[in-house]
Length: 357
Image 1 (cartoon, rainbow, N blue to C red):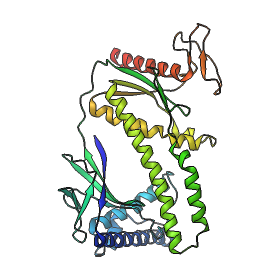
Image 2: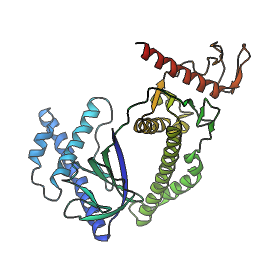
Image 3: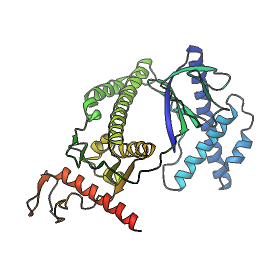
Image 4: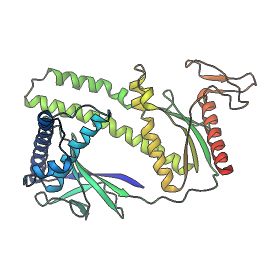
């Protein structure tokens, strides 16, 4: 299994200047490649391949060769996504809009040694914090954020053989009123980090909109807004990591809904709350943590999990405002708890069906 690690970099003033210059050269190079590709299509109605672009821009010495190749790859990838209808047409990157550069190969473009990142000769060794050692590293990237410089890297993590018997099982129902309710009657209150920081963010955005374009004060206010957004993202990630770790350690088998988040955010009344909840990120974190431990996460179809009575199987129709499940069989429970029981039951039925096959 391939996982992503991240560490914060602490470059000195000279290294910061070199990194900033490298990022600016990469931005200009990206724009030049994009311009070449657009002009070639206008003149010949034919696109240029990645390999032809590498020949055209061979020997550009202000950018390391591997970084140059990855920038060309990025432009090509953006084109492919556009023609496959998975994104918008590639845009030119304005000043400070390039957020990362790719490090293609561990051992050649970068390596970790004594809590330092060793990368291109012009930069040298950079101090870092938060690094997690691993046996095998793959590609990496240097990222520029409002709060500083970071290195991200992919590394190989071994999975344990999945257990055949599951002693501790739980079903979880994700929601907005409670972040999740499980089949053991535990519930987690949603932290709503974006909502909590919305006043502070709105105030910072108002100050930014009033600042004069091109001025130094506007740049400071733009960084302040970016830092607030980054803090919200970090708080959310921290909460999701801790909660997913708690459940992965506690249970051998977890059943969750296979939610269509892309379809759900089309509801504009709930889109912001759904994105703030980050259910898909939580499920992805839970999935890889369960695999590392040899535990099992099963995603089930969410259809009828709320309507169906977990005691007798009868369908009980109710609106979103009704928070209690009341069935004619006499079973009364919180609607989310009832859904969690149904989710666990569906997962167990799936496991039984697989064994029979």
